[in-house]
Image (cartoon, rainbow, N blue to C red; front, side, top):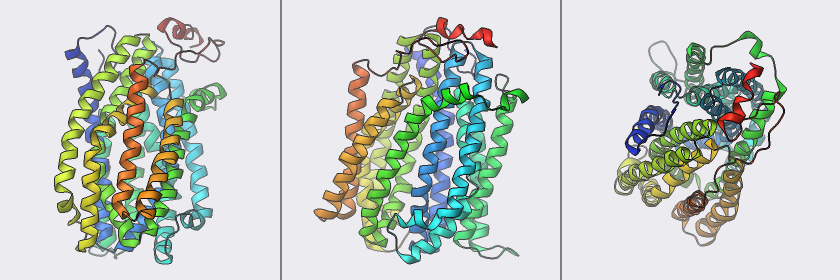
Length: 477
């Protein structure tokens, strides 16, 4: 096995599989831990300015999540395609499509930046926020949203490296930029020596500088990878490769956009509960997200390994990796769920002294803790489905869960029945459990791989279901 590529040339024992999963997952877990720390530190420092500023950052991030959905979709497509082609021993194809995904990332990064510049206030008003929050939110939104291209590059470049089996480089970059962000947050928000106090503006500037540094570092790591070193002629727009990325990425984008659209609606319901309730919701979310780090790490490993095994034609191996990744994640996130359940109130005291807000945070985290095993299944199996080129089913399932389960229950339990924030988090948990169960059933039935693609002309060279059909493309390079 070449660790940088994550390739497996022959079937492994369960012990060998577990070792490979762990090697790939642990750096991704650490990376997600530091990304989580970034959000935690931002929320912590901003909370010292005021709860209105916490809400401003929260609603801004809710809208930015729509941008993230587009960038992540490009990343998913690049990750899977690169893993497929490396698994099929087509490194030149992987190199070409990785550069085309960067081109696509630049296009969407520029477009979203222009949208932010022109429509910042109207987009935030969709959240139904108060005037005080809108003013601070629009200011913060423009600072972090206009240079969206750096966000886009970070998502896609990290995904490219992971598709090649390199989870360590994104981890290193994440550690560095989070340290930089934490220092800049403190200096720019509160002022230091000759640097004036900038408040929420400082938080935004710190975020942008950190992302810029991260993008530059990731470009360096991608170009240093032997199989992905940039070629000048590969920067020219190639419609065939862009179509490959769009075909796989569109459902992934659809899934995330459906989720974000639903979030905007039910966030509006949470806002209706009051500024303090929404602030508690945001703080609880920033604490809860620590539990996601293991899920994302093992989901990353599942996508890489399933993608490469699909590309190599080892379908049974792909199933083994998906199954073992899920078992490991369920065990780990169950333990994290217990911590959320018993330490939720204590965590809330880091952010505010208002007892009602602390109580709401504790209630939300107790509910979240009980649903952690379901979240583990949902995250890892979604990654496995994507690695198997099946991005459509998760999209349809997310759409149904978000609108028919989560949003409806948030309104019924949180607003109509008057359960407040507890009702909101029960609704979120019910949606997670529903989707996890459906994905598990589909996986058990063997209906999780998208393998029924018909052969196409050599000039298109889409990944097929076996190593032999993919190898037919090799002559083009």
